[in-house]
Length: 189
Image 1 (cartoon, rainbow, N blue to C red):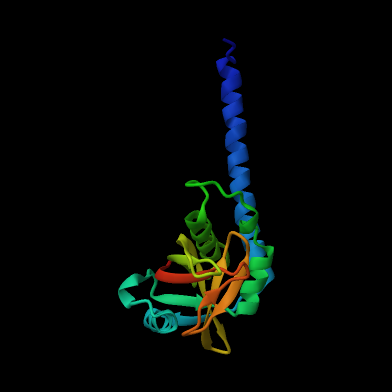
Image 2 (image 1 turned 120 degrees about the vertical axis):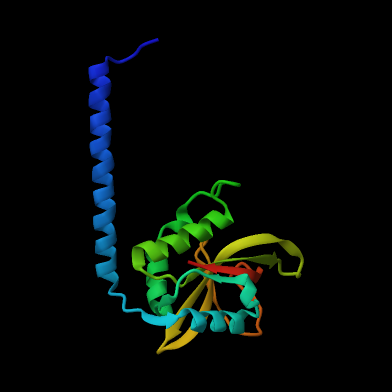
C-alpha cells in the first residue's frame, strides 16, 4: 500500500486548515452581505403575544407550542417572500432518514434565525391528507409568523418545494399540491 511521507501529510493538513479557515471567513462575510442586502427592520413581539397568536390561529394548545425565546423578530410576508425566493433549501436532495421533511424544516428555521435574525419560522409537526381526505402520514414543515402594519399573520411554508399559503383561523391549510396540513405541535426557536 502506498503512503505519503510525514512531511507531505503535514503540508496537506496545513493546506486543509487554511481552506477550512478561509471557508468560514467566506461564510461570515456572506452572511453580513445578505443581512445588508435585505434591509430587514423586524418588529419585536413578546413570547406571550406570539403564544396567544399561534394558539388562536391554529387551535393548538399552549402545551404543544414550544417557544424558546422571550422576544420574536417579525418581518412582513413580502420580505419573507424575497428570502424564500433566493434561498436554496428546495434544491437540496431528499434522502430518507437523512435529509427528509424534519431536516428540511429544521434547517430552514435555523438558517432564518442565524442568517436573517428572524426567529419566527417555526418547525411544525402534524398530519397531512390528500385531496380525498385520506391520511398520508406525519410530516414536518414550517409555520412562519409575519406582520402587516403590526397585525400578526401566519403562513404555512413547505421548504421541500417552496409552496406556501396563509393560515386563516378556522380554514383548512391547503398547499398548491392539494394536500391538507394539520399541525399539532410547533417549536419556534
